Amino acid sequence: MKKIAFYGTLFMGLILVFIGGRFLLDPLGAETGFGISVPVNGNFSFHYIKGIRDLFTGIVILGVLWTGERRALGVVMLAGAMVPVVDFSLVLNYPAHLTASLIPHLVAIVLALLLGIYYLSSTAKKQPHAAL
Image (tube, rainbow, N blue to C red; front, top):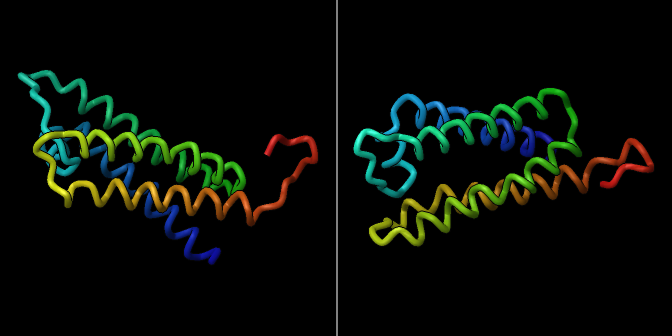
């Protein structure tokens, strides 16, 4: 299970870096992949906000994975699960959404929750006074 968790986490981190970079470099193409369409009229603020959020999150996941701080990674994954939940609800409430556009967000929710629970439950506390 340890290798599966490692590669699942690595995949999530790398895909978030890719998605974030894509929103920053190719906003309209990334928007199509996200599952909604927003009127831009030359203003890509939504795209840049989403891009930097995903890029940052991917870098955090990869950084914590690289340092080997598995409990911290569990906290990051569980807390970060709220992001695909909100993304899923945005796409779901978009009137012209395609059901296929919901699947990546749903997969991200499940992966983040499962990996977060795994890391927290399989890693012992290092300090007795730690909150988690």
